[in-house]
Image (cartoon, rainbow, N blue to C red; front, side, top):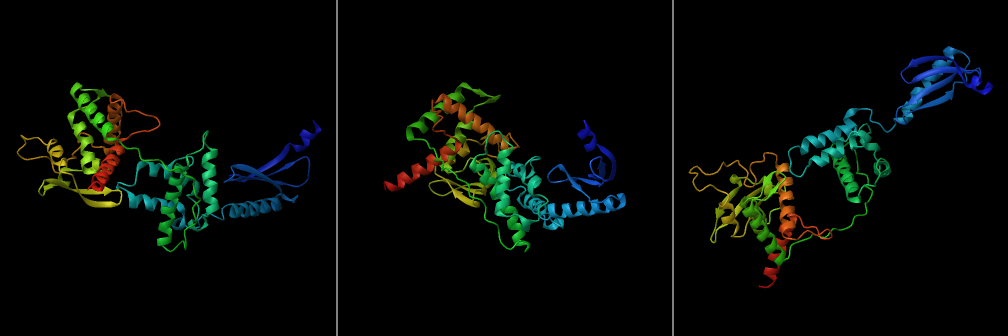
Length: 354
């Protein structure tokens, strides 16, 4: 009981938010109580002063010194902070097909996003060790460790942000990013027999009018999946699902499509298709429309103005067709991308046989 009374605070004076001096019955000296902003806890130190005025002066000196040491890695000017360059990157990448909503989430997640963690840091103070600490921090906040590939995405974005600082001359050289152990995932593709089964099932689903989460499978969807094979387009927002009527011309003998692909993996390109792509494309057009299609309209699943929704819906329809074709396999997961891989593989085999 006596010990409790000795440790009990007998007098306290609040100096500013997070900073106070107090006395207990144990010692004649004033103690300093300071809330460390980064640690999120109180730090207690003896002022070694019995005079309240002297203790106040020591308390302010201690708080300023502690804050200076704790924040030595923080930017003195916002223009050199990680947050400044992260927002600059978002502005540059806005609207580009290769910049996804997922990338924005990695930057802006409220609890452990890159801006939350590194935002106040001066870009010159971000080292390999600090990036490694961040990756450890990500795992500590989760019941299950993040996949190595996901961690690699974080480091890629950190590198992109810091690259802008290098371009501005603020940072001399990029820090080496911690290497992540990644496992090569094989690109699963269709066999000839599986592709035939898939397209047969697609036709049957369209004929029956199968409905998947409120969306009816039609011949339009079956043509779209076949179109991937005869155009080699990636089933992404920048390629297949970004294709508009104004991007397509029918040319040559035999006729083929010449497409302006605006958001490809390696940037814009002109892509030439196989001849069978021509009737597949013409099948999307209304033969009774004298004015032709809206040139700014999307070719595939145009009813979805949000192309991310179109992609997700197409994937669900694809999986339904896989199930009906009895091609679902947990160990060998086929995806809309598998159609493109099949097309490339078939073209390579055809060329090797010549």
